[in-house]
Amino acid sequence: MTPIFICYPKCSTCKKARSWLEAHGVSFEERDIKAQNPTEEELRLWYQKSGLPLKRFFNTSGQLYRSMELSKKLPDMAEEEQFALLASDGMMVKRPILLWGDRVLVGFKEAEWETLL
Image (tube, rainbow, N blue to C red; front, side, top):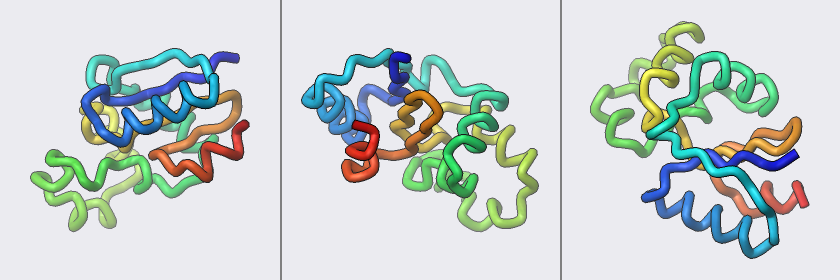
């Protein structure tokens, strides 16, 4: 199965992750998170497969997250609201996301990505 690399092409972390994949000879399908926003269903599936807390799917350093003051609001939001918010705008979602078989990696941490090889 070909890995799916979900990114924002202008993001420096996404560029590092893309370079890492290319340097390791991993061919992948790329998806621009802004042009093809993840759906609620996709986000729910990725969340379940990842084993991560839902908060890890939020781009906490993004302008949208900060302007909406989500650091204050998120702890009191129901899971349903959080998924709807994530699905409302691709820039709300942490990136890159790598979908590789049953694995879902959120953000780029080289050590985590190494475990896939």
